[in-house]
Length: 231
Image 1 (cartoon, rainbow, N blue to C red):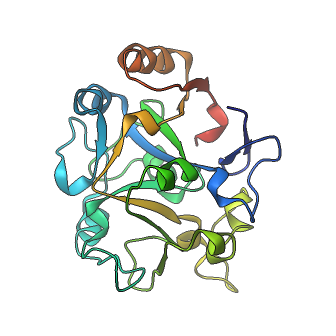
Image 2 (spheres, rainbow, N blue to C red):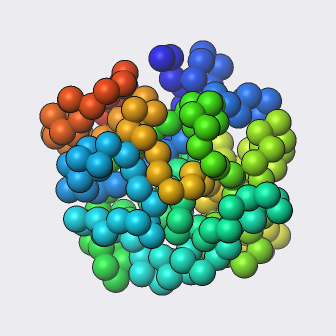
């Protein structure tokens, strides 16, 4: 698979052109986890939603995790009754505000970015798998977030231009930039590991560890060291 990404943001896509507004099925979206959690994920054969798993190494911010457990996901009236925490989250731009928090540390995690491994999945593969999914236009834990599963409108539903930029901090004229940069693809309950097509680490050492753990998992995937996807 040919993969192109925007170095400033980690927004990636299959194909030579990189992310395109009119081709969201080609977007490669990112779930990150601590390397210590990878063996348990392999043993399950799938990435589980936060409400269904207790990670070996929890890197989540407790207050954010609590809000995600209370926010209903409601892209349309036919969507199953569920909360954000019932979904496996994937950031559209790898260099998300949450990754920045991981780099700086918070009340329950201070290990930095190096032990974090990115698992990349093409949105089109999620859709074709038959999984129940939707996209948030901003931080899914906020009260004002909106959700959609209309794939043909995703390029305008999310802030496509902001997802390509280096800087996402709020400004006096736009106090919601940080939240919009945290747009996510949410997959209900679980994602089979066989859908993961790209593994990214910050260092060769961490990539070697990830490769050794994932080596026996079915499917075809690329392994890359891309320090630029991290803070």
